[in-house]
Length: 324
Length: 255
Image (cartoon, rainbow over all chains, first blue to last red):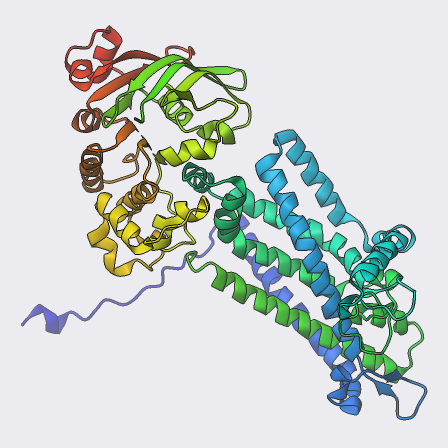
């Protein structure tokens, strides 16, 4: 009788450890509940919004997203959010374009240039900027910043008005996407800066030493070593900022004309859009049917943000193939 | 050509005096080993030879490091020019993680905005001199960090060699490596020393004896700044040390 015939493989046993101590059990329970409740919450919000929004999607069809008319005084009512949706996207793109160079420079200064004391006080100030309520920023944007930025806009128009982007048909430079995107940039700079700062400070200093020892200057070290190594993390920060930019409501409402006429790229015209601000501006006096339309706008915004976040994690994963 | 010497080098980090009156001469095409217990200032010293302390806030220096008759700390000297002539290999292998093997070898050129007409030839020469060519020639496009630790360190040596420095500084290049990799790097050092001046910091007495022709023994006693206790031919420092402390150290009585 050979061994092979008699002995089957021993039964496979689970290696999972059960929490024995009471503290462990409670901790496990709480963690599990917290994790699951976030899934439940997001689904519930989506379901609730979906149900309330459905009548609008049904009556407006695909035109809801791409059309550019919002008229609730005709029968049947027309609700189309094209200009608002594009406006949100345009503001976010411009805001990110303005914010990213500034945020990366701030992070570089804090981590690589400033001494300990100066660096940490600048960090605190930047984080304070992130804590600024957006209503305060909106008021600042309206009362302080808009007149100044309108002057910048006029200068841009005078110098580069022949380029369509900087065209302006009237002489009104206030309440334009240009101004709103600056306000958005101010809001997202601290988010991107503090994530980038974190990434920079975790960077292996030996890589920087290696680069300098090879005869690199500070700029080429930044461009060819620091930036590529930190890219994935920075993209993550940028996308967090983008999420906030897309959802920003009050601050934009103060500094932008919401016009239901699609403005693709004339950023100096007093004509723009933002889904979130539009929902806020119309919600107060909306009829039942209109509320459904506003809910639907919320669903669309939610889906766009979700898409951006998914794109984000994809890019972050792709951008760091060496980090498994 | 390419004569390097340190004259009365002192280093401070903030208020702390870490290195005092170091006078050393590094003869051309010879390997000089810097030995001594931890914290004696030998790594600090080697970094003064290519101005790497620039990154450390509060670091200060007195004295001169003279390269071909010119003090490299002179106000008119660009540290980049110094580092192009004095290459460095670090304790921990540190290839650039975002770059392939080939890109790592060529990284110095890119970083210092230099061009080469024959990139492939340069890559092969540098990798051959660092004796890693045969292991990587079929996968030059692979990420540098897919290599083993020893291979990464030899890649870092190749990366420095591609810049054709006249002097190579090595700060404990084998301390993170296994014995096999260490032996291969030592062989590389001996080959390189035929036409290159090498300064190597090491904790390993046998290594110093195997690779170097001259040895400097650093020591920092009881909170005093590090100093050179003895400097001479490796043979003499290990076998007939003049100073009693050197004798104790090389025979393993402390450190």
